Structure formats: C-alpha cells, structure tokens
Length: 414
Image (spheres, rainbow, N blue to C red):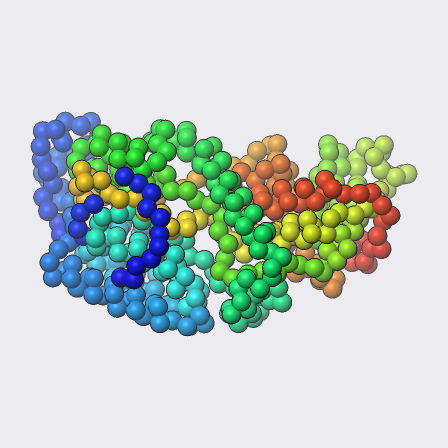
C-alpha cells in the first residue's frame, strides 16, 4: 500500500476466520454478557493464504483507483471495493456496512481523493488490525470540466487551478477553523451527555472503557468508542469557488417581534435595500405599508458571507469525517467481534430561540441558488453557522444611506 502522511492520535495485531468464543467464568459473570459464549461463534482475524489473497486484491484495486483520470467513471472500482469488503477478511468491518450506492463517488477525482484522504488506510486496517482509522467521507468534485451544468459553473475553479482566486484563500482557512470550532462545541453539547459513554473524550479513555468489558466485548466497545470520539464537521467539496462579485443576495426572515424583513444586498457595490413589513403600525409607514430604507455594507465582508452561503448548498448537512486520524489498537484488546456495532449519529436540534432566514442568490434577475441560515447559531451545521455569522458581521458594519435603485424583480419577490 502507498504510504501517506496521516495523523496518529492515540495510545497493535495482524488481520478472518471464525473461532470458538472464550468461555471463562470471568466472561460469563459479567451482567452485560448475552447467551453463553460457548454457543456463539466470534469473528477473528484471517491469516495465511486467505489474508494474502485479500491483500493482493486490495493492492489491485488501489492501482486501478490511482490510474483513474479526473472525469472517469469510478463505479467499477467502487463496486470492486464493496465486493472485497463482503469477503472473509473484512468481516470485522461490518460496523461500516459498505454499500455500492452509499456515498458512491461521482467521479474519478472524487474516488482518488477519498482514497488519498484516508480511504486506503481505512481499508488496510482490517488486514493489518494495528490501527483503527476513520473512514473519510466521500466528497463531491466540482469544476467546469466535471460539472459543466452547475448553476455556479462560471465561479468554479478549473481542475488545473483549484485555488484559482487569491481572495478566497484566507476565507477558506477561516472557514475551516470555524468548522472545527463548531464541531468541538457540538461534540461537547451532544456527546458529553451520552449515557452510553459518559465522559469519554479521547482514545485513551476508550481503552479504559474497553478494558472494563469482558474480553469478547472489548473490540466492539473500542470501535464504538472511537466512533464516539471522532470529530465530525463540515467539509468543503473538492475544488474551488471564486468570490461572487455580481448579482444580489436577498435574505428574508423575521426581525424583532412583529416584523418581517427583506434585505437585498448588491454584491458589486455593497448597497443594501431593507424592506420591513410590521404588524406594529409604529414600525411601518402610513396605513401600514412596508417601510424601505437603504444603506451600504463593506463589500469584501458581504462577498465572503455570500461565498460561504453558496458553499453551504454544495456541502452535505450530515456529519463528515476528514479521515486523517488513526488510533492504534491497544495490545490488550483482542480483535474479535460478535455482532454489528452501530455507528454514532448526532441528532439535529432546533431551539425556539433560533431564527430561520431564507436567502436567494439572484443574477440577471433570475434565482441561481437558494438556502437558509439560522441565528444566532446553527447548532447542527458548521458551514451554515459560519455563513450566518459572516453575514451578521457584514450587517453590523452597515452605514445608513439612500435607498439604492431597486431592480423590478425585487418588488415581486418581497
């Protein structure tokens, strides 16, 4: 297997045949133990010729993946990998339940990137069984060449220059840090109160938890705990997006107790048109008509917020793993499994204190993309949360001024 620079985070065994389970009195005495172990069969690492064949098959798949061109169809390689994982030597991978249609890469570039992000190390782990690696999330690849019908095709960076807009480099770094910070806050909110794994924060504590179980349950407990401590976050797609410099960003939502506002931001100038429709007549013009005011926000701050909002429509809202973290399996944990271990999923949360804003990006009078943001914080989506905070920063710097010339379509949209 090709060596890659990946991060090891924690505190190893070789890679599957079925062997009789241990039957010590210590094992049977634990109240968590199910039916007598002597009547069960446990999956254990494979060896010998079976292991050698699996390694050869995986090596062949790797060579085929690395030979893919960016625009190639990756389905044959993906299905070969799924089929390999149905074999005896990968029986211990049941926790991941690979499926041919689940997170299937959309292009050769997407599969090659997934493989390099840690997919290769994750696959190899079930043969070497020395380190538990995160399975990286499959990311979509976007570029004018790969996705020519994309609504933002003119803003997508070409394959040869994925970092094509110098202005967005700092934005990208800031966004990645925001994703990580959001993931840390979210982890603390959801995981710290997990009754099944109270107080578990790192792989060292996973070893302690696993060692408190009967021998036959330790590996299952280890996998479940590692899944628990793996930090999920928003992850950018493969490719780059230029800063949007034209068009309008229209945001609609409640403002205060009795008002609905439509804010239209012109990206070329930073001008803003704010129309408030309030049930409180004191906040409206005569006869309860909507009130329109104007102003201007910093152009760069506005464009960064819109850039991030556009990205949110291209990023899965499910939890994503980078796949760059590995956790060495402690020597005291015997690699065996008796049943599937459920992968962790954090539920979504909505608070009555949140406000949902709907936005539309309009160019040449036509809607290009739309989405939503939540304030003051999006508890579940780091990308949307960052976009909302950036927009709030731009709005906070608004300077009142004349109402800008409003395009005809804006009145109909309000």
